[in-house]
Image (cartoon, rainbow, N blue to C red; front, side, top):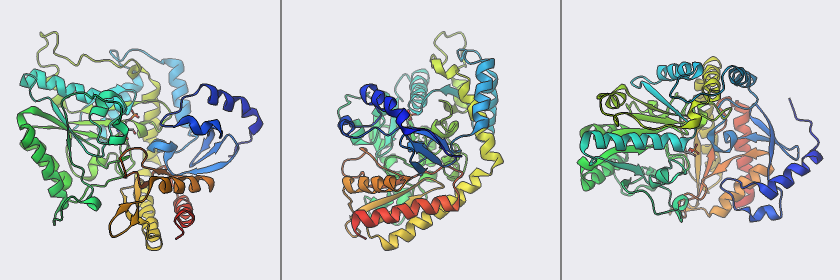
Length: 460
Ligand SMILES: Cc1ncc(COP(=O)(O)O)c(C=O)c1O
């Protein structure tokens, strides 16, 4: 299938965009002299822009979202049918797709038992934060209320989630932030803070050091991404997660895993944490839950946590006093059900592992040719290539040149990403997250474009 629109018909759209749209994460000065990019159609791994140009999408809708690819009629049909039957009722009542998807999801998450629907990854994380705070009040007189987050991790764009934000450039100029959020060090071994044999355990021990400094009786939860996404695609070093699990148990700290990016297949298992054999208390997810066909996010927790909110029904404050209006929309779970069926029926978890392996191998081959690639990291179809000016000092490549590589790929018709206004001086990692339906030739096309772009930008 291809698109056959007349680009001239879109002049009005482009003008309306320029006149009235405030794009996300964009400095708009450039749009005074260039047209905004408008994506008008998608099919499989490919999208077409307003000029009719075709692109291979190496980042699943820009931000790790369209996991099952574009143009899935069965998702659209399921959403349409559901909307005609019953589009919305506040989630204090149930819905047929809401119940069905919750049960399908819990089937994939042994040890978890309750699904709370919201609209965005940020909001799902806030729900977990609110529960953690309420548990502190109910059980510990408000004392065990601190939430630990990790340097380089990102949990959302709201003020509470930015209070748990480990990316200094994202946070700059938006403070003051909420109290009671405390940073722990990142676990990127490539930029190890010490030389040690078992960096994973060492990095986890730094979390314990923060807990001891703050006082374990003040720390309620630890919130981590399984693989840090926008902070540099950081795969955890061996031994890290096991030790993190032990530390949480030792100090009775609830473990909140932010699966907004890794969730629903991205790493080759349903959830990123399932790669590491750990048992969380809260799991939040959003982007891949319905692959962007409808807005849906979930905050999933255990029966133990759920029980804490219904143990004393005579206390009028003893339940989770929270609502999300659009958490009652039925389009999200209707789309999520089909999304999950597609992943199962098409064997997309296995494909993700296989194609992710190919992507990492291809990038490692490029590293033999291009000195500028300092390290390749990845798990499933979630990969990064950190660019450095000097391999021995690991001096980060300048952000402008990293962006030039992205722009060169775009000119070739291949969309890739890069860490973007996250960390001062360290926005130097190219990001790859093609849909879980990627084929060998898609992967090869992405890395061939990167090869050519690196050659042109760095002269290698
Ligand atoms: C790890 C992580 N958590 C949370 C969020 C926030 O999700 P949303 O933009 O849906 O609020 C993001 C968004 O990129 C993310 O990468």
